[in-house]
Length: 598
View 1 (cartoon, rainbow, N blue to C red):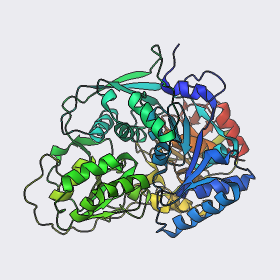
View 2 (cartoon, rainbow, N blue to C red; view 1 turned 180 degrees about the horizontal axis):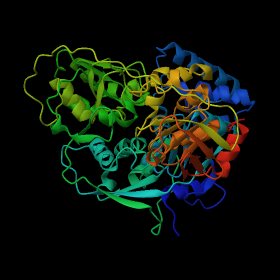
View 3 (spheres, one colour; view 1 turned 30 degrees about the vertical axis):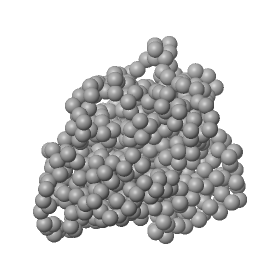
View 4 (cartoon, helix red, strand yellow; view 1 turned 90 degrees about the horizontal axis):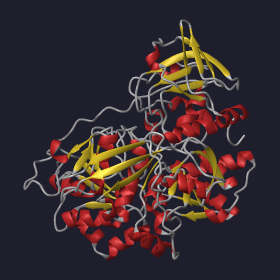
């Protein structure tokens, strides 16, 4: 039986053929940590008495808040710098830009290589046929200490793009169309490969845009087969030749999904859900307060060029704010040399330091209560980029909207701009709670909390405004702090309680705090129909029991007591029983010893 792309890459970096469902130890070529996650990586290493296995393959990247405008970020960055000086670990400091882009731009990765980072969009590496994975702090600490991590080989889905997009459509529009078809969990727990007649025409930048939103579709990674243009790009970046890599003709795919992009028009995702994408014309004319152009999805030179072509010689709408953040220092410098920065600034844009922008509570790009933003980013979860509403679109649609003051397509910008009307402030986000037990029995008993919500993302569980928190005891009060209706959960939960919830729990960011906050509260177990891939790993590695089972459909009542056997998956309660997915040997072993690094 042939192998898919991810199976080939994991085989090359493991001890034998990698088959779906198997757990393999994967050698990691590049091991990175960002500014907010890096501090916890260091603390984990120090607490466990571990050293860095190979500093030459290990790097800090400071991209979330390069200005250190938040004291928590500034402190974490300095802690990482000090550790790097002591150990020889490399630092791509605050002037360099987004770590995943630097890894590609500097030739650290290429076809067939492996990369991990505390960035949930490390799967961008799929754009060049490499394996990239966002992981939590303990995972990355283990990778730094041992040079490898355990990984469950995922099944692969094949995505086939059908037809030729319309002349106004971009790679971002293709990505949003894919998200609309696949939904927030359409690739849950799976890798994906993209094929179709138009794929060979996609540039490296186009492929990065599409690969960057695998996480928003629940996927582990979206991979492209490198063509000659990609191989040439990687050679120019690294100074070395790269061998082509492709799936075997007889590779097995769990599903083939066709996405019709024929005649595709510009798309836009509506607030709160990246997969709620509609044609721009459906919401054209909606008043907008601010526009953001940047992020790992659309902050490259091609994106800035596209925006500048639309904005050149014009002024953004009165009362509107335009924020632009180039992805890397190299992009910033090239944009300056080409006059792009000048064009954007003359149009009224604020240009930020190279980096992520507002996505991870960075110093540029956040919005306020009641503010409506159109962003070229990859996420618009409630509260993710601030307290307002965020639409996701291409840089072209963002630039057109900035000129019009209302949502607009680049080929249909209104000739006149209506006066800006003041808006009332919106309401702030919600709160939350839960609790846990520190014992390590294999049979758990506790009171049930039925959290009947699908696709609960990590910003709902533990909001990004608290990311600078590294002390476990301080995390508990912020649990579910952005999940409407669960504001009183922390105050009402008791140690030993069990959380029962729906599918794709923990989708979104790779932040470890979204797991650790439950531990801080004493929650003994989480039972969900399915989990975001990174979240599940983080929970297992932290020794936090998580089980897969559809208990919401079992007719339980909130407050009812259940008993769960981790070794068999059997769940029982007064009047019923159900069998969930039992713990694997790896999960059980990590749980019983108190965590991956214990």
